[in-house]
Image 1: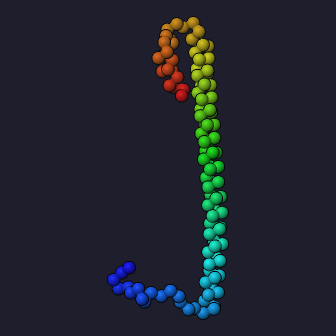
Image 2 (image 1 turned 180 degrees about the vertical axis):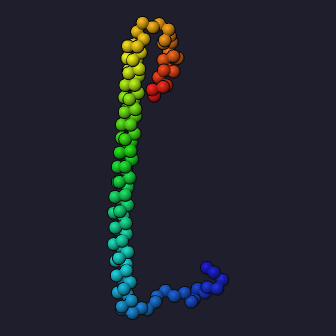
Length: 107
């Protein structure tokens, strides 16, 4: 309680007209309806967000699988080309580091 307030002067009831009361009741009903709509929209938003996260994770998984498939195919092509071009050459791919250098040009 503030120093300027007096306990004896507190108003507990206010008299209003029937029209004002009816208008307040209409507004209260509208607030209830809007709160219900807001709750429904929040539920739909939550559901859509959950679905979006699920689909996003699925896209990431598919991208990873595709990347691995492409990488594997590139490695196969490189090794096939090396077999065709350098089948009799023992100096071209002496060790794994040479192979990685060659692979870096294609990936």
